[in-house]
Image 1 (cartoon, one colour):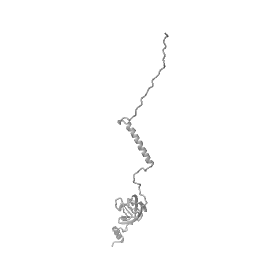
Image 2 (spheres, rainbow, N blue to C red):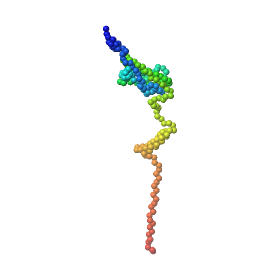
Image 3 (cartoon, rainbow, N blue to C red):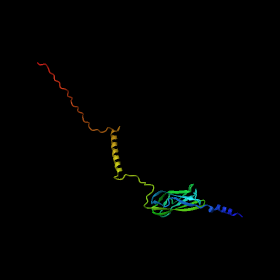
Image 4 (cartoon, rainbow, N blue to C red):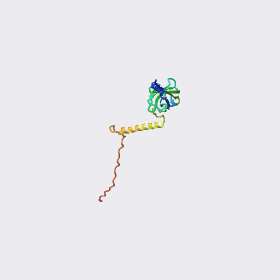
Amino acid sequence: MPSRRLILGFLCSLAPLCAEPLSIAVSEGQHAVVARSAFSPRRFTVQVKDDSGQGVASATVRFRLPEQGPSGTFSSGLRTESVLTDAQGRAGVYGITWNGIPGSLILMVSATAGGRKADAAIAVEISAAAKAEGGSTKAFGVKKGSAAKKWLILAAVGGGALAGVAFAGGSGGGAAAVGPVPPIVTPPAIGAPSITVGRPQ
């Protein structure tokens, strides 16, 4: 009759009953506040650990956004994204486009490795008042009446004047227009007077 140890070893080889359980720790993104109707560069990162607290490499981590209400889509355009953990058991997603419904939502996270599974939840708030992250995408402009606009006008006028001078004096572009030159008048020279006195008659 086989011993109890052999039986337990056989059962563990068939099912993950003897495997160490998994846990998920949220590293980035918990209680994040994001802007509605906007693309967000914010990263959501978790770490998958075993029972001893060590990171589990090559575990499959699935992030899932709600199907209704406040939600969004990943860069793939879907509401789910799967990522493998690195050597330290870390995995993350970013580049979510949030929808226009403000409110609270739960980004669900599940991890599987060798038949073991763990779940976690990341709380996110879509705020109507929050500004979009990552800076504005609007083109730079000059406000009406600003000092910058005045400088631009002056620069344009000055540039036009310089262009006119260059055009008038450039080679091959014709002689510059010159007004009539007044004649130079030289006054007559008056020498010293001479008197000739002849002999008396």
